[in-house]
Length: 96
Image (cartoon, rainbow, N blue to C red; front, side, top):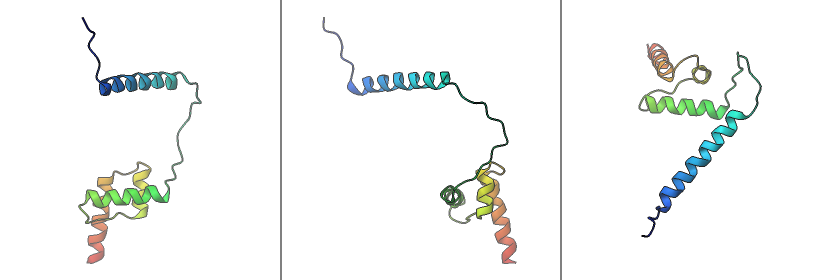
């Protein structure tokens, strides 16, 4: 009786999962240095632009948050939703 063959795509997935699992074990067993907060977070200009771009997507193109708010989002001090709401309030108050 012939042995069933494994489709190539399935074999690749199984092989990839094995390598991923092996890599996870290697990472887990790698000695490291314990770090202590607080961590200094300095987002790059590109990262800030990306957060501003996401604010436009989140608001359907209505709002672009300021660089200062984008920095707060990057540091985890405020959520993107809160930053968009804050910028909307700022924009409305400047229109008055």
